[in-house]
Image 1 (cartoon, rainbow, N blue to C red):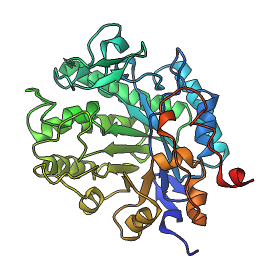
Image 2: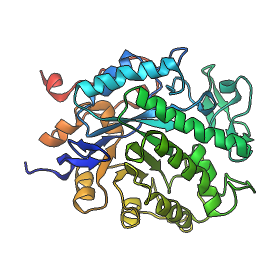
Image 3: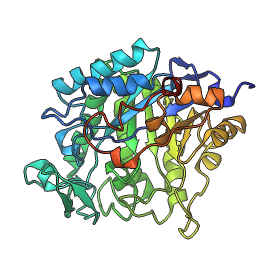
Amino acid sequence: MSQQALLTPVRLGPYELKNRVVMAPMTRDRADNPELAPTAMHAEYYAQRASAGLIVTEGSQISPQGAGYIYTPGIHSAAQIKGWEQVTDAVHARGGRIFLQLWHVGYVSHPDFHDGALPVSASAINPKTKVYTTAGLLKDTVASRALTAAEVKQVVKDFARGAENAMQAGFDGVEIHGANGYLIEQFLRDGSNLRSDEYGGSIPNRSRFLLEVVEAVSRAVGAERTGLRLSPAGTYNVPADSDTRGLYDYAIGKLSNLGLAYLHLREPVGDMSAIPNMVTKMAKHYRPLYKGTLITNTAYDQEKGNAAIRDGYADLVAFGVPFIANPDLVERFREGAPLAKADPATFYIPGEKGYTDYPERKAAAA
């Protein structure tokens, strides 16, 4: 089989990656301990997938305020840093590279996570969804509390501290989670940001929080070790902006000059044509506008991934669900082997089942 574009090496920040296959960040809810710290099981899970050119971990809350899902690991305590050290040591021992995703969910939370206090966001908004709380019950969300301008500055510092903690834990870099309707996107969109101060109103103002976070993290650990994930077409947890193209053209134009390790873009899910000013082909649209390394993600298979790189629309391709059931995904791509199917019933349950028990193809055949 001739060399596939996905399997060629690529430069990312200070690193030479062995291939262009990225393991996408995926919440797995396995940190079921009082410290919300990664365990030896997490280390095994990520090490099994170390043949990826780059692993991006599940989202990890930068502070207790940033939590909104049960059993997700954090990056704000000594126990969590120590837990993540097991993961980075295991991945590096197998020759892999790994970035930690920095996360604050904003209003996608519940008072049960915060000793009865309200979740926070750009504005006092109820996302009108449901979340599993610390009691293990599915509950309706409530209206959040708007962060003060001073509190916004503190959250920016929390992102930077989380990045520093990640480097202390041995990560190769960090990815800022600016997608999927969480806090950064809540500031970006005019349907969730109703502020009238320096962080609200105009597109530059609504982009300010994102850019301040990126700049603070870049100062803390280096722009070349800082990635960012965005989902311009996403409507998960947050309404579409009234001018999606204008908003993200502005923000990504600003980001293009910052020398980041990469920009990670999610492609649309479903038909977005009814939404005004919506970009429907993310990588194709932003490739000419963004000067740095570009990762594309969402519903790619091997053929589409090779085509995206070969045609110049992206430098790397991130795969999510395929990595769950195929720890040896890169090897399967190399050999043209069929992929195992993941069991969705085990995506978010504690324990090894559906997590570390998927065999490599050769082991399964033996």
